[in-house]
Image (cartoon, rainbow, N blue to C red; front, side, top):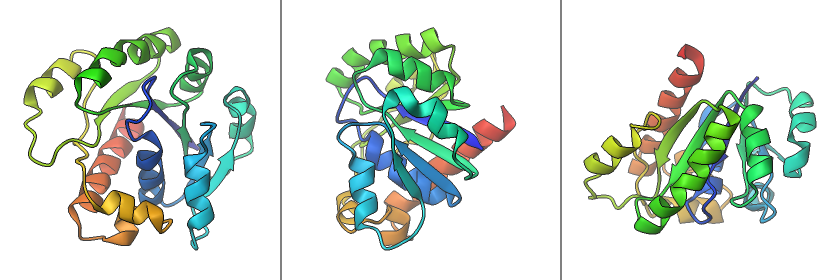
Length: 197
């Protein structure tokens, strides 16, 4: 099993939505929902599909929960604030996806997440999430690449809230839509990072 943690010390950057969509793109996957808000678990309650399995687990119990999972991929949705548990989760993962929105407040808070990644000696990549559809992000990407690789950008699309409200991922809601294409491109990039690095 390959374990990927979706992380940010900043709330509201779309970690849970990204986790749901990547888990569906991964197909043979399980989600460990460590966020007390339990957004992934709530989404799972609305799903008619069996997969992905969603396990609600306290952040401090992730190592134990990982031993019980049988899927090919495990995606961990993390809470925004707890540094100690984030470090432990990062150390238990093959890769951490550092999620950020391209806004000044998110960039101001990025240092705390990067410090946790360094403390964990974690392999990490960035996901620029919820970007404006027409935003030019070349300068931001260049700055981020000084720290970790940056994957294909995930843009703000109407398909995300529509799909979540139905317990679906964007590639189940509108498989030909731009949101689904972006998620699938990002997931393909992540697989290459985990398998080839």
